[in-house]
Amino acid sequence: MLQNVIIGQYVSTSSLLHRLDPRSKLINVFLLVIIIFLSTNWLTNVAIILFTIAMVFLSNVSLSFLFKGIRPILWLVLFTFILQLLLNREGNVLYQISIFTVYEEGLRQAVNIAIRLLTIILLTSLVTLTTRPIDLTDGLESLFTPLKKVGLPAHELALMMSISLRFIPTLMQETEKIMKAQMARGVDFTTGPIGQRMKALLPLLVPLFISAFHRAEELALAMESRGYRGGEGRTKYRILLWHWRDTVSILFCIGFGIAIVLLRFI
Image (cartoon, rainbow, N blue to C red; front, side, top):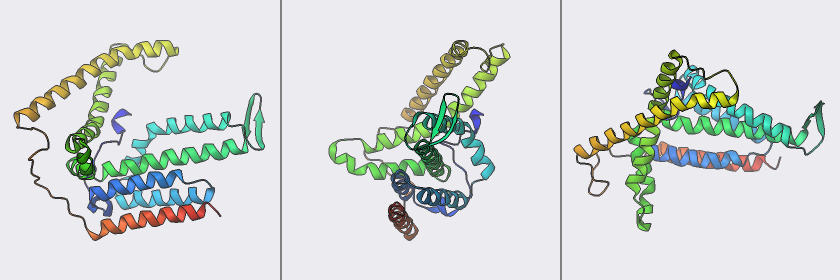
């Protein structure tokens, strides 16, 4: 299941989202996250769901691959939904059984939060799925360039974020291998009391951290052997080009945000 995590992975195919400049995709997803949190009623939720579905089809990413990637996260969304449903006690009573009572406001908030989580996860995942890691690094560095005026290292920040995203699938695969090796030795991660399960994770965490530090050391040595000395004086083989479609995409997101704000008052 861990190897199906889609965060940090890139799908090499042809689509409109693949052809967008990484800077425009990063700006768009930032705007969309703000827009999603402006959603307050069923009309805005439906509009956001339809928009997210449209983006998924425009990305040309396999639906089965995308579903396998978000399946581990659905448990978190379900837990958040149930927690909000049971703890919010505002509005009229809709259903009651034993000590559990479902209120109207609790159901509305639970649905809103579940939709927000799913759409944010899908839209942010589409950025990495449709952008090569090197392009994502260049896009982040370009957007962080104004931070140089206040003394922040834009290139180093972009590089760290890109490396973190790049190694998420690698660490997931490493975790899967260690789990299978431990299960072959008789370790059970799925049954027993919660304390026993937590104790069973210790043989998993120790080799995982050792492997992560080993990979980090190898990466640092490889970068030093190739003469990496930070962002000062570096040239770029690939130059990011801003096209008209990038401007149109940002204007479309701004227009979509205005429409969501207007739908809030209907």
